[in-house]
Length: 191
Image (cartoon, rainbow, N blue to C red; front, side, top):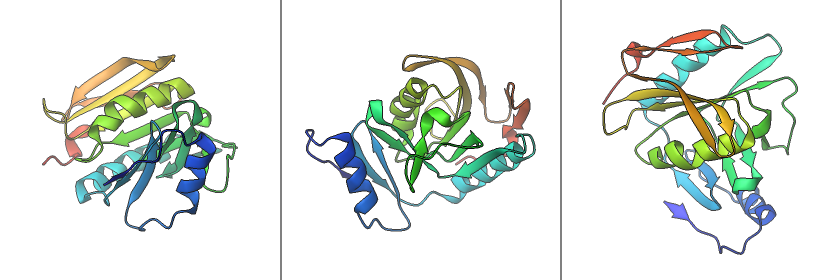
């Protein structure tokens, strides 16, 4: 389900609408390119991959960094309020409000596609994270038409990333400094 507000709504009005609306607890509500999207609860497969990535990251991040699940992050220049599946912030993360932090404060954003948001994760959010200057973006795409993949993006330039590493599920993907982490995708469930 997607709810569209009038295109003349300002960024402040969009965020206020997001903050003040009583959304169903089982849904993920984001603003992508100025459009409020409501997605259903993630699948077991999605949750499993999220847990595996989080566990790996917690083993390698510096002690004063945070690994969050579903922490709202904002990219006002793209009229975006994203809820990445996993996001890593150094301390302090820099608060934007009681609900969200600036995406620009993140060191890594991880999105795991679902049937409902794959296009947004591949295109709109990648551009938003790049524009915010997030150094690394890991896209784990279970719904890739060519088969499940994991792609690490880096070196943001404007709203574009360079592909640093791309693998099919079953292969390892390596995150560079400051993580120095190899993630084994062979454990990720496929449909």
